[in-house]
Length: 275
Image (cartoon, rainbow, N blue to C red):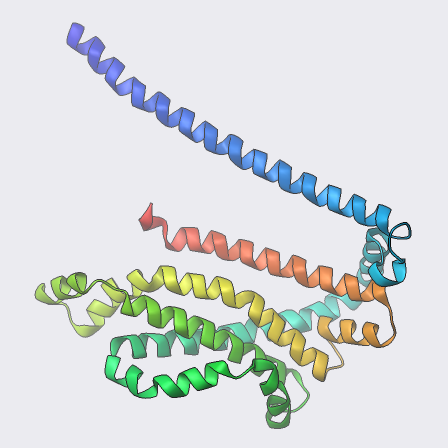
């Protein structure tokens, strides 16, 4: 009977500790969300108060004017029309750039000799400011959406490529040799060891490249476009319409935050084995 009671105590203590730990995590997460919301409300309130009192509204606009402009765009359909163009170019450029970067990163990481031969050329291409490539892409692909996709893809490619390459090179050789000893083929090693081990690096590259993909699209829209959020901002800048400029910037910031949030959820699911 004494042994049973001791066993009961021994099994209940860890369960209580786990529950307390999980409850602490929940409380911390709620506290973080509350503080984030409070900071956002405080920032908007200070911005609204400072506009016209500390700073001329011509330079900083105000939250009420910015949200009013966004509401107007929602009513007349301008927001959906321009945002869909920007998101479409960003998504296609992101997919093309990440796919090519991932494939070449695996290839170069697997074949060290090839990476050493082409290293100076890749470094030289990576060092070129992507903004300088935008006029060239406009010449090649025209002023349509294709040039914006090309700018976005060129930026995403190098970020994903370098992270994938680093992830493949950092794989522990012991795991590779052990898998080969068990009779795995080259594709089996790649599928079961190299790709899962490099996943964390690849996800990091994808998270970093999403804002850059959006930046690449907007840069292309700045230079030549008649649609898109970048076009709205560029047009508003020429007309000294501060409200529209801040509205466009706020929309881009919210879109980038949402996409990064979705990528964090995807990262947690893909890397759930690390827990």
